[in-house]
Image (cartoon, rainbow, N blue to C red):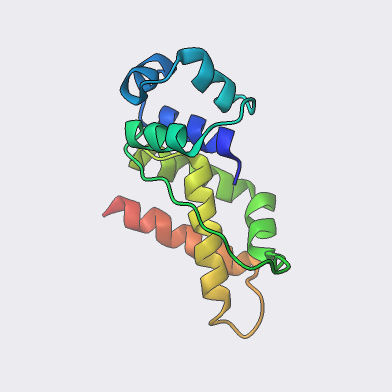
Length: 138
């Protein structure tokens, strides 16, 4: 996870300024701006206050190291211009970020892949995108 992008995406999705988040979190504007630009070394207390100001909850997890599995789903989504268009449309309709929608789309395609006889294909991605578009019309 990229902390700076996550903070910026959540703030923008909430249509908030850095100043308004700073006031709610009790932190300075330059401090938050630096964090959003990948600079600084925040404390857990500061991250908890930021999460609260953004309507989120901070979670810290320590897990055993294991080699990351390559995601063909992420590659399929990244290579699809149609997926990019649908992601943008769904994000706008739901008031979410494109990054969040893309992450959920990849996770859904990965989960679907567990039920398929082989790895997901372009056709599987297109079917999932059709489903998203149809669900948004109802």
